Length: 155
Image 1 (cartoon, rainbow, N blue to C red):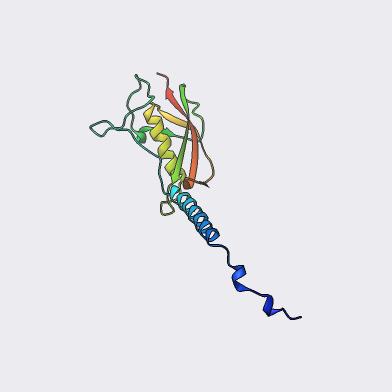
Image 2: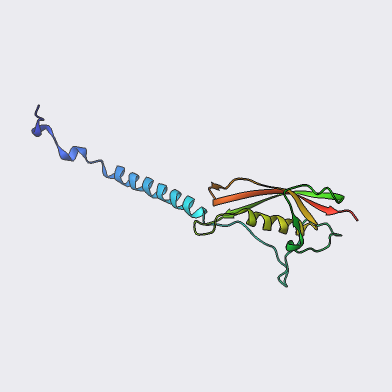
């Protein structure tokens, strides 16, 4: 079977000029959306409030809570049965990998954040510590969630 060459007009197949411009506009919009999604993974939303002398501001800490250092907070996956305690709060923290070049979040990083949160509210320990699974999101290349219960020993 042969195709009739005399009926084929190449110029009939070229779209009108305004269609080409519209296609370019659509391409630019799609490119802008893709770039903004990719770059949003590089953005971080963590922040720390500090006083003029550079010390962290303790938000939601009880006024009578002694100031504690994060390294002084006991962390355990179990319950504490040999001492009486008061429950201060159930803590939830998330460690994010904000760019592809950062290290993957680890349980040790979650432990540090749980200690910091426990120290902020004056806890003696964080008990019943649990870890989630590493996952990705639109704003992070990887994140790991941790939960625990902040307690203060009774005197």
